[in-house]
Length: 333
Ligand code: TRP
Ligand code: SF4
Image (cartoon, rainbow, N blue to C red; front, side):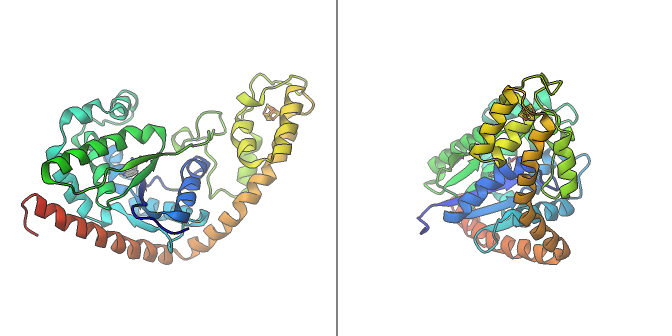
């Protein structure tokens, strides 16, 4: 497919280290689709990670490498997409400062994600200026590449809305400069962890892209199922079963899905048999990813070179944007 005019996409992920299947099917599968016909800029949002982890910063460079290895292993292609490090392009910080001048505090305080996190994140103190300004930094990340759209899940949609408002204000004050980034809402499948809650590193219920096959097998074997199904003779309901919702729906074909629905509701087989029908499919799908991953783990300098080369590519675009921005604000270049 030919690349149209503004089909540039920017998306970032905070470096949490090794990624799990929630990241894979919720975000990376979508990046892989976009990569086919968009000009994609994918970056490691290490500064954003610090907004919540500032008290005890993780080993950011280790987490960055592990995460980018996962990106590359699933097929994010450095010949098609730009894969870079946010903190490697200092221009993001400069634009962030300038955008902060025109962003009313009220917009940030009203941001639903902000309010929710203040209520819910009890393990860390996020009553900071940096955390309040999270969406302003995110706006800088996006508009510095003059992106046309940002792929996000529902939870991040208010941030992109805020970005559009900041852009409108900037363009209104200083003349048309940035395109308004559109929200590309991603349909993320429900990925549940071994305990039946949303798959999340902090719940210790995750299956990682880098897990060994025997570990994956064990995790699925011990995963909770429809809790109403205590015995093999109890009928179950796949629609409330985490194994069905996550694994069968993502990895099984139509025929198997019908077999499960039928057999589970009629108690024709037990959960072990049901799990055994999907485990090989999961392992099969992850096999090439594992192989690629093992290769890259052996050659980390190659991964670092890719990040370095692409960070330079990204910076070239950012530098150009900043020249225009400084001019509009009466700053010297
Ligand atoms: N806030 C995003 C997240 O937590 C990460 C992010 C930072 C981002 N900057 C971005 C996503 C720019 C898209 C575009 O997942
Ligand atoms: Fe879930 Fe399968 Fe057990 Fe039904 S038989 S409860 S779908 S694991």
